[in-house]
Length: 215
Image (tube, rainbow, N blue to C red; front, side, top):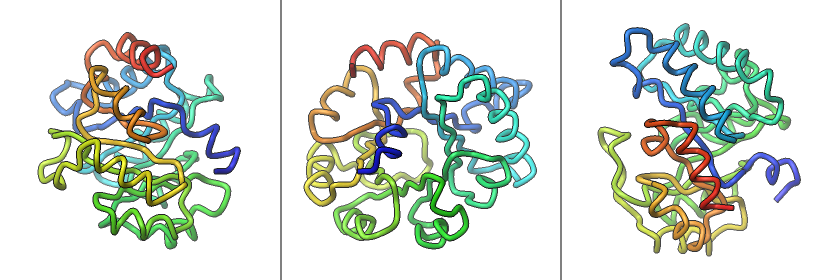
């Protein structure tokens, strides 16, 4: 694990999902306010996810988030899926899934100076990811989640333990993670956990409580 990756991966990896704000009259402003609250709560790693927006919308949102975070140099921004837009928005890295650009191809786009993460859902994918030029491996869903319309099968805590046994790369758990179950996930071997839903209500307080539990 490089010192760069150690600095990247705090215990809490917040995901700002644009689709969580579509009901708002101004989704972009709601997303920006959410990210400000996360930073005020101590979050230092944020992934921007937008599965349904156009490239111009994603880039517009991303540039606004970059502007917001300029006052907090410690905060790192990760783009979901789009390596090209990661570069265009001057993000710190990109996270790709199994159906996105392959990690080796993504690395060619973003270069060696940016962070790269990949999602995995079973031991075979973890083994493969362990051979790729990635800075961390995400594994899940650990618990049932409503953040995806067609989620992969739940892996449970045993799936986290299995993934931990297959790689020495930093491991990020994702899927149904809450303040009530996060400690058990760390105990199972995860280095960090990606959270969406349990940060949406009172994000500053929720982030502070996560970080207190995980300290």
